Length: 208
Image 1 (cartoon, helix red, strand yellow):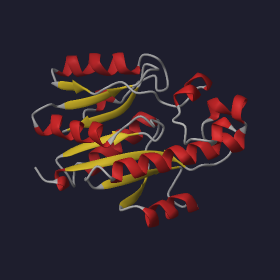
Image 2 (cartoon, rainbow, N blue to C red; image 1 turned 120 degrees about the vertical axis):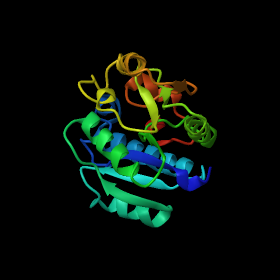
Image 3 (cartoon, rainbow, N blue to C red; image 1 turned 180 degrees about the vertical axis):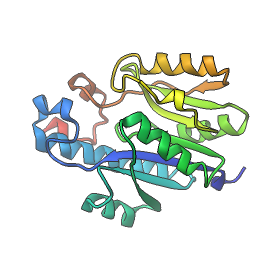
């Protein structure tokens, strides 16, 4: 297996005050929440680009924000626009698109500071060893990563994104598909005020 066999896709919003990390605005304020989001995206991009696979940054609402241009200049990645309706439709589109360029796709968000290069390499190894899917459980009941060999719409349609049953529902659908899957270690997503305690010390924005 070569590194070109897999693509790592990072989904990220532009760091716009009032639109990024909205559930943290009541405790951080809009500007600090957006600044924390930018820190998290930068941390994610540094991590995934160190894993040794081609990286694609999938941008919302589009790639025109200066932050995405700066990311393109700072890291070895390609930049793409998210396309589709809800989050599930945009994820399915990005995975299907990337699978025209690679055998496996690993899709992650940008709010999991605990994710490591080891996690990413384990995800690719699981797929290359025959798993149909790999999932990284999040402590809030969702997942921080999904890796696929092929795209099945059932994994993305009519999902309560952001809710506490996303992981359970996803695993149930994988079972219904009779797919083989591997679970990675659990990590925390930084979405809610109670998640701020999970931030590493160098994430200073939320601690000031």
